[in-house]
Image 1 (cartoon, helix red, strand yellow):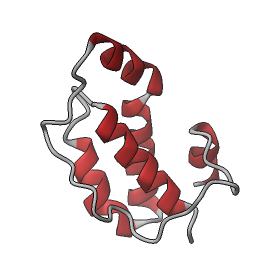
Image 2 (tube, rainbow, N blue to C red):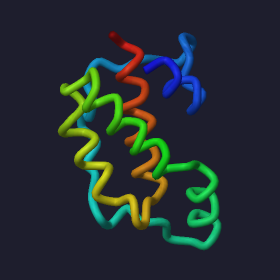
Image 3 (cartoon, rainbow, N blue to C red):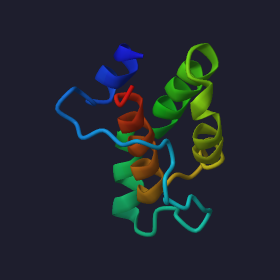
Image 4 (cartoon, one colour):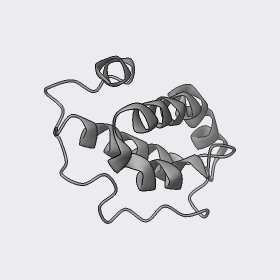
Length: 96
């Protein structure tokens, strides 16, 4: 779990959150709108982050299952909102 957090620059100084998904609504209308957004999200490694979360979820953290299920639906065309949701989940992982 620590390796996953380090890979995506989530460290002890990062503000942690108490719930895996909170009030964030993940929906299909969050895809990138501009070409710049689309290029930025490709540099973020969204798919890699979601796959890492899936691994952590299956091996040690079943409490992440609902949140990871939501973000994994949009691996084909993630937007900035989807990436923000993944970062939220990663921040939740440091809370415990």
